[in-house]
Image 1 (cartoon, rainbow, N blue to C red):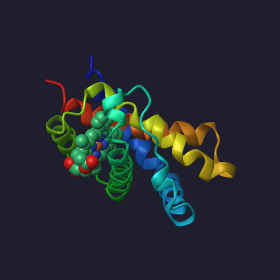
Image 2: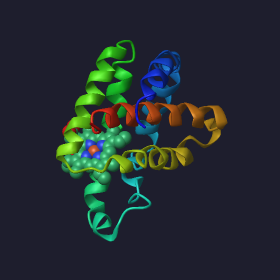
Image 3: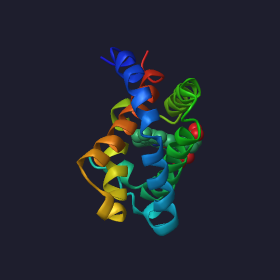
Length: 147
Ligand code: HEM
């Protein structure tokens, strides 16, 4: 069931907002000090052989995912805009034939990729914050993908 999540999302938005500086500092630091992180995303676990053939595309896609994180941060004070943006992104993913079940794979992959670069800053709280952000992103995308 996807939506009961409406409740969860609206609960989460203020938390996301409160964590704004944490995400901003980390993502910008990451881009400055570790541009290679953008290349780090590996083919997603659990995908089929055919999916893996497109791993170059997946690497490029990692940049697009980063772009989405950046857009969320840029709109941190306008949660309605975040919702609209992610809803539209979800709709476009239906056209890309992205399976709903795969959407949840991106967050752990992203966290796996950024963790080494943020070594001394990394702790359970930080991990939870990033995980919550991706939970929000994927929940909002998925609402536009399930009818
Ligand atoms: C958190 C989850 C995801 C985010 C934030 C995300 C983000 C994006 C963005 C920003 C684009 C650029 C085009 C556009 O804005 O419409 C894009 C394109 C695309 N995405 Fe995703 N995506 C996610 C998950 C997935 C998954 C799970 C798949 C498939 C397994 C997928 C497949 C594609 C494809 C095929 C394209 C178009 C071709 C390309 O640009 O590489 N996406 N995605």
